[in-house]
Amino acid sequence: MKQVYQLGTDGCDNWDVSADLPEWDIDSHTSIIKETRLRPDIVIHSVSTQQLIMVELTVPYENRMGEAHIYKREKYLNLTKELENAGYKLW
Image 1 (tube, helix red, strand yellow):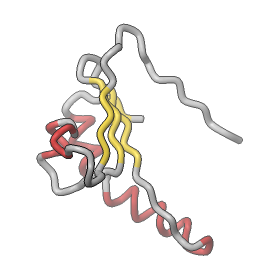
Image 2 (cartoon, helix red, strand yellow; image 1 turned 135 degrees about the vertical axis):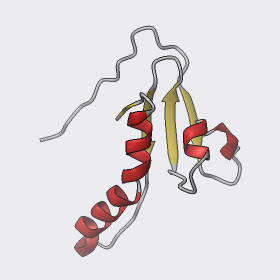
Image 3 (cartoon, helix red, strand yellow; image 1 turned 180 degrees about the vertical axis):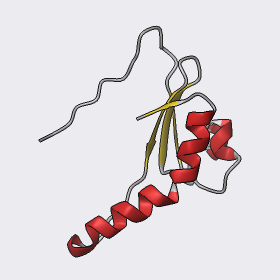
């Protein structure tokens, strides 16, 4: 079953998008992410409502999709905890 998430956009009109691409300025990542050595591929965040979406792209072999998913979740586990402790709601 497909899950659909609706962001809590009440009062939020300041979403910022940053990406870990050569032509994008990595300094646009929210400061808590800049302090780590981790660089999610795409970060969408709102400072005013403290909501954040991290997107990490991967292209594994079909027979390694489960392993790749676990690896990526574990890779960002500490960062996720830091963001939640700083008051961010993560999607």
